[in-house]
Amino acid sequence: MQPVTFHVPGKPQGKARAKTVRNRSTGNVHSYIPEGDLLYENYIKNQFLNHAKGFYLEREKPVSLSIIARFLPPKSTSKKRQLDMLEGREMPLKKPDMDNIVKVVADALNGVAYHDDTQIAMVVAMKVYSAVEGLDITVEEYTG
Image 1 (cartoon, rainbow, N blue to C red):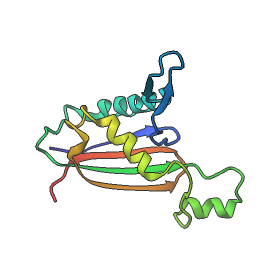
Image 2: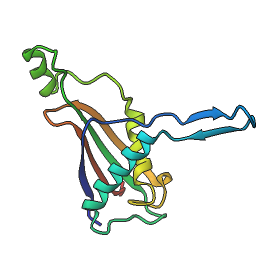
Image 3: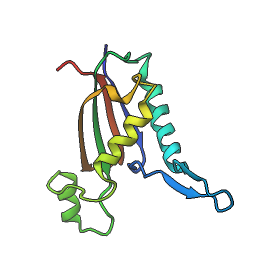
């Protein structure tokens, strides 16, 4: 099966922690996923579906994910430093954390590209500076 490679435009976002609140009148505790996370996951899912052409890995198939998170260099930096950033001599050591980016992508593709994210056997992920921000994602069957 051919891998699916797609781009998710916009500033890369990580998965936020679930919010937990207590109802003062009943004392019950309730957790929920922030709306921004759900919107971003749906955005990733839709970008995948636009490129998938029927790609789906059944529950017995191991999955390989490749993620490149592309960030714009800050406008306040010098031209020389921006050039260093764009040519890979300086990496984006800033939020969101890479593990949170991987988590939001894995959750977004759950049930769409593969049966469950427990199938993910290998992840290759990196953050870079680029003239175009967004996520470049490749999903494929892991063959070892």
